[in-house]
Image (tube, rainbow, N blue to C red; front, side):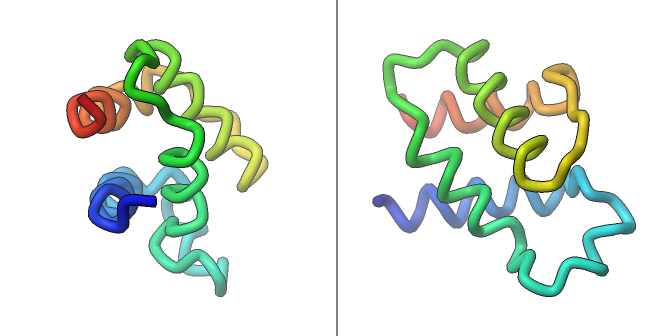
Length: 85
């Protein structure tokens, strides 16, 4: 797996910080590394922006029990889509 891509997705997730203030309460968060790895693992070059966006929402929602909608993750999906192309 591409470590450079994982690092970039970690940066994007950390900047977005979907957990907000609660992120300091999670000891093993590690700047969203697990979630970044999951997103990259399941992302394919042929995936559309919509598919990548749904993937991000699904990973974040399942990992943290959140209800992130796809509007919130759209800019990250755009960055990941560009990165994969």
